[in-house]
Amino acid sequence: MSNPRVVIFDVDGTLVDSQNLIVSAMESAFEAASLALPERAALLSIVGLSLPVAMRVLVPDATDSQIQTLVEGYKSAYFTLRQSLGSAETSPLFPGIDAVLADLSAQPQTILAVATGKSRRGLDKLIEGHGWQGLFFSGQVADDHPSKPNPSMLSAILRDTGLDPDRAVMIGDTSFDMDMARAAGIRSIAVGWGYHRPETLVADAFVKTPAEILPAIDTLLED
Image (cartoon, rainbow, N blue to C red; front, side):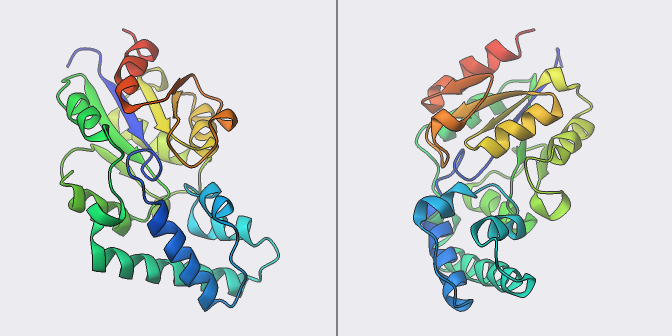
């Protein structure tokens, strides 16, 4: 393989639009915990964080017991909704993403990876639902790492691939993704269709449509 590179994707808000599933699961979790539901914008603002961290951001005054109740309630509701409707329905691809993944996977020098706040079970179900088996060489999840923006996930991907940071790029929709990339010393591409406002994203490149992803990668990781 000539000068390999690794392209790392966030999942929710970058590859798939799971906001309705996330909000519905949050509604169930907060109802079960008898706590007031934050506004939708607040719920989406924490997408990408590990669940305990996300719940603490949403309810900073909650007790540890309440946080645990929220986390378990969210997991249960999320699982139930996904089981009843399927991953393709509850987490559909953003238009154009399938073509981007197909083009990248066809490049012999490009390795694909994922760094997500999802659980291992959640990522595996999503991969199964979209027929992505074998697509991602490395999949790093919240079960095994500190929450974003800690660079642990990206460090693990670099170890898995044996590549240096200057041969990697992180693609995501949140400030957590951009901060994580910066902490790991790798380049970043912010997408404009996700859950954080574009003006809050400090990245090496910004794309408004999936079609712009490939040229941005080539520019940042030019041989």
